[in-house]
Length: 184
Image 1 (cartoon, rainbow, N blue to C red):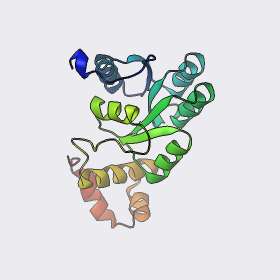
Image 2 (image 1 turned 90 degrees about the vertical axis):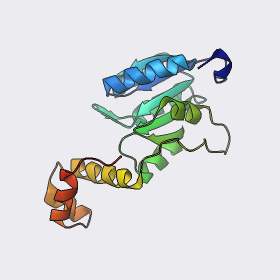
Image 3 (image 1 turned 120 degrees about the horizontal axis):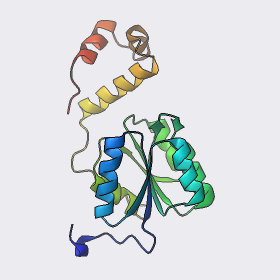
């Protein structure tokens, strides 16, 4: 990206990235640095909260599900210290209820993984009531369905019978879906 294409980030370009997927976190940090941000990374709720409370950034991208808890705890800590911070929630497990909770505590947007740095920048910099432009490569409906099934399967401790019951699906149908590769 050329210097003239850099987004207008304002005087404070600090960015907190919180995700427990180390390769994704490192790629996103490098990509955001190329776009003019000054990223600081954390791989847990505890580390994210510590940074949010001691050095609250102007921007933050926080994964919802982390190994030691919920990313919304980081958002709350950030809101205590810096109410004007622009926060985007990222997750591989999109759910309407979680999106509503994220927005209620101050997130400006909610993006499903996989996403790219341009989508993150658009979400962080969107202003007012207008929505950012749609992603270039959104998840297909089949992929969203597959992600939802995987999420419920994990929440049921990988119990196929319980997952099938909660999804109102035949057990064998669920087994076939789980045996296939994820759709694109």
